Length: 252
Image (tube, rainbow, N blue to C red):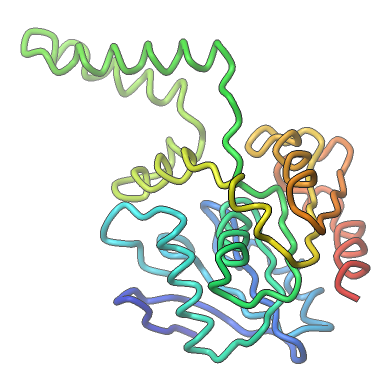
């Protein structure tokens, strides 16, 4: 199904029946990448899953959005579908949007499940700073007329070497959006989350390191943290049975 929100064509689907649960995918994914989890949740809930703008079958924003704009769209989506007091479940970027919606009370969230959620910007390692400044220097040199042709390919090659996989894959406005959202830090919003919150994290997550989950556990008043040993950024795929068990217990 499709609905037009803020002049964007948003793809969504409703699974199951019962209490409403909004499912928000992570960066680079449509909801169809989470069907195994969604179908399990749909046994007990009315799951409303949507493709965020720029992913799946939803059209991308025309300008470089931040999390605030994504959250405003989801809030409007919930109003249009008359979704009241939903459970919010989000992975990665979807988790960041869900926590923003809840903290700012844009949606009257009943319970919150954050899976390897973005939201806390951790300090970069010294090696990361070195790579970042080297890239900026190379890019600035490539703007000089005498060096432009010579360095153009080197800039692209270095970008592909040091940039994250998400950054390399993103094109146009979505690359600008990625840069903006990864540089946001929402730790000041976390104390405002007053609903029961389940944090699910992979021990080996390098995209949203476990340190971020541990900080969220300390700051969110009613948070519980479950860590999946040896799992990365997709704990729901690493051990789907245990993941579903943890979510079921929390939502029961």
